[in-house]
Length: 308
Picture 1 (cartoon, rainbow, N blue to C red):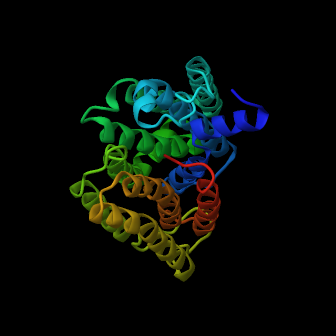
Picture 2: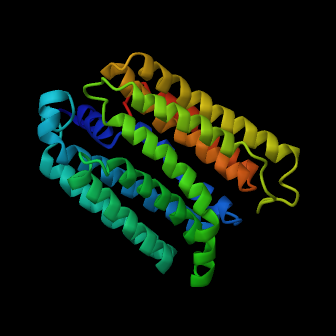
């Protein structure tokens, strides 16, 4: 490894730090979907999510180190800037930290976080190159939103269960988007698929229409289904469609590796406005705008560190 600056750059690439901004919105969307105000346990859930997400990034490169040596030799592990042992140790440490944070939020969040960690490790170590890969990643994202819902509702076990049930539609929407992005990502190295990005475009359009539906009264203020909340919901849903649709369309028209990779990056960034739309639709327009504010930061950092 090189000096301190190059070492930090290598770890930023390994952990794909520009994609981190797509994570905190899961917890806020989960809380809003459950009709709850964010609290200290919501912050713990977001911290757990960030750790488990980064654990998956490190483990992904560790598991794919031989493949990357052939197809992407510039990546941190095949280039020798980060050792495989260090990447695996980082993944284990981040997983343990994420579970510890979830445990501080309560038993129900710990159970959800444990299932999330199992999905992440199963995907990276075995399922990534199988037909079950998109469904596994969709499950992981859905669980991440449910983690925010259950953590916010704790410590009462019955409240956590009720919150999880209320958040299931939002979790399913986020999972569907993740399924589409993961399906496209399976072609990002070699390209060649037109049907997959077209299907992702269709899914994005349907999800945007679903997310734009009139919000319900929520936890932030009485009458949150009024004009203000409806406007935020429509704005964030439109932003979601614009962010994801164009890259998917370009990849369908020209399924080359660069445009397919760009479509995957756009799909990852589009999770932020989708989270914002789901949060606003859950009755928390202020929190939805706060989530949307992460999008410019993700876009700026993606110019320096690729999210894929």
